[in-house]
Length: 342
Ligand SMILES: [Zn+2]
Image 1 (cartoon, helix red, strand yellow):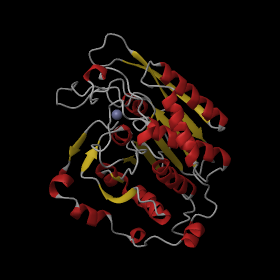
Image 2 (image 1 turned 30 degrees about the vertical axis):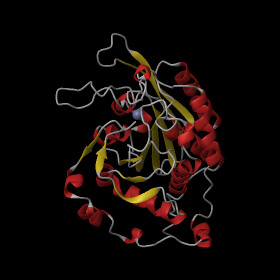
Image 3 (image 1 turned 60 degrees about the vertical axis):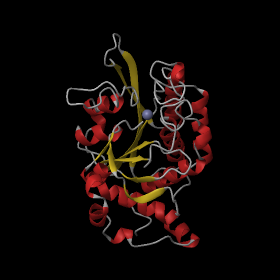
């Protein structure tokens, strides 16, 4: 899950001045359009498979917990690899060992990357999510079960479901851009009581940090036009706002996504600023690689039983997966030319 969320200067000062600055521009002036206009705006853009996405979320649940080293993790790795090959994408695997703070033995981890290639002059878009689930349930109401791994239907399962379903769309209809889909391992591997000398969390985001320090040569240059990371996008009535650090770095990517979401009438994607910044798998892409990376994550972490055994598909919804999935499809297929603005 998201690990840290600290109040930033924006939160302290209030978000209105920043919003005023970041919400200017032509792209924000149009309101929802009627059905006919929406159809015209998205002509030729394929549908996101919302039923398939929810099915994949449930399938992951059936594997059980998918924490590194577990049988569920192994099954999901196999499923992602098989779906990548079936999509006609190139599979890139990054295996690495990670030693958890205080642990004696390393844990074997693996990032999986599905590369949908395009001619060299086409833009490249990176989509990412973590597929591992948490080894512990420190927030569970039952103290005797807090050391057990969780199912993580939303935390791990939702982003993975959206991107695997989107890969099936990419396989059927080729977009006018290259797309790299990255499934990060070890995002939720840390403990909140393990800190570095300056009090920062350690051990979280193991996969994205490894990826950023060991980018496969073919993915180094040119840098992607945008990198969009998903986490916690599947809960019922989820609200996804702009993450402030991402908005500073690549606000135009949010502009493009929210314009599309508004045109479709998706109410889950709310075009305003979160009160706090969030550290997640997008962070290493921003800080280590300098990529134009943004995070799509829910705005409120207190309305869902995260890091408990209640994070199950019953609390997730197809509509939430669809709002994010279809918006990403609209973005990927509209990248050039843009079906909304043209
Ligand atoms: Zn988590």
